Image (cartoon, rainbow, N blue to C red; front, side, top):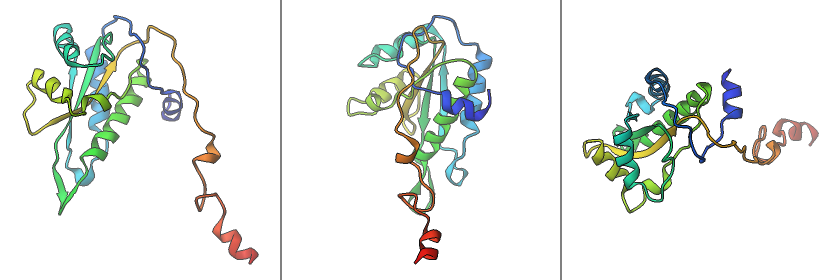
Length: 185
């Protein structure tokens, strides 16, 4: 599969997973894809913990409420540190976002499904910190996201995207060429 195919076929999967274990070699490839992502001023603010041990997965899922991805045989937890690049500029959100997308594309390439799970683990109930504590993550790191990883047990539904012309243009917001307007005036 080439990169453009992986991008166009990737979709968030929230269904049940088959119990088949994800080989460590595949998890390492996924983690490497995340580590290879760009990082603002090369501060490398993003780290990962791959979890494939059933007992650890069970402990993590015991604190994830509402439950999500609980049947996946593996999980990648995404950690970030707020390291300032220069002056008051910190790019940790951009860093972990790029890393997550790289991993999601690697997951598709390797034949697995996943979903970026962030929203309800970073809310005020601090589920991310509860997960981090289970994984013995130091306080200076924040667990901001996890990716369940496995083979889909249910059919995958591709979401409907808005038409290209409603979200992408050339040369200005409406797609009107400024050069053409100058030549016609």
